[in-house]
Image 1 (cartoon, rainbow, N blue to C red):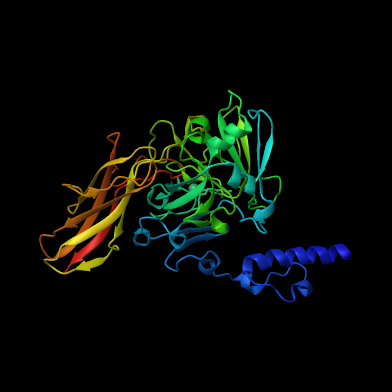
Image 2 (cartoon, rainbow, N blue to C red; image 1 turned 90 degrees about the horizontal axis):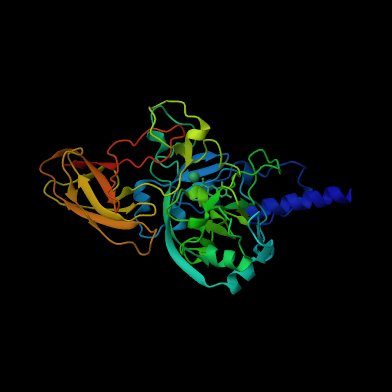
Length: 406
Ligand SMILES: Nc1nc2c(c(=O)[nH]1)N[C@H]1C(S)=C(S)[C@@H](COP(=O)(O)O)O[C@H]1N2
Ligand SMILES: [Mo]
């Protein structure tokens, strides 16, 4: 009898933390009952998102921005896409949060509290581009299963934390270390405690970069719950799946990490190009590392009407994984000819770059503005679609907006 009461209490306490208010008679709620506020939650309010964000899935929660919402230089929380593979952890208490470093290649297993991490190591802040590997998936044909992201699974917020490298040096890593695999507090969709929703990570070369952070702040505040509170790995320029949210353990592996969604076809593309719809064997699929060059027109909103004779100023961002953007161009004739945009250097390595251009249209009518970035390696975005791949990753086609001159 006592135990039942205890269970009821913890359950209503966990609801309370999601609803954000005490459930006054929570203790008398029938067992298994889900309060109305959670049966029909307003995800936009729940996650403090703008109502113009697009909900793609609620089991698990996935939400994307629209291009015009991403106009800020630094992405604010309300416009930041949400990508979850599992169930968001509940009842997180930052005061007793720990991070354990273990695995074959750690000299001695070590556990840090969050305050250890905050006090022992130097803090760094970087603005870092995080794009879901599946951003743009909705355009592939034949279609790929998964969230049908259009263009909005991209963010570039400011992250503050400590360098993963500093923590790994402090913990002591063996020479044979190959990969850092993360483990996190979210639940598998089945709620089976023996299964992880996702457990990916980065190879040592990425783990040791200056900008690879164990972050506890986003845009100068605690990381929002849905984005990984209280501790997140942030590896900018790589598919955002490498940036584990809610992490409580890092496993230093002497092999390529083989956690959930590291193997098979997950976050992998054919090592060599394949024909659309072709079957690809698992062993012919390679892990996605640096993301490809890409850009987004964030002003004006597609469909804008401009008076004849008026010039239009377009704005947007461009990014190129580990590289920088060397050139940014636009076309108003469906890619037959291209004109240069102005493109600024990034705030820091792995941050997106802002571009703008002033466009004059020859006469009244319908136009499309296409934007094309070229990286420092000389690779440009494809105009309509890149090579097809079975899971619909890495669509870095030129972004396009419609304009009417009236
Ligand atoms: N623990 C955990 N980390 C995770 C995920 C997840 O489901 N669980 N999703 C990953 C994927 S696929 C992406 S694209 C990013 C999304 O980050 P965001 O929701 O903060 O935008 O988080 C990554 N980190
Ligand atoms: Mo992702």
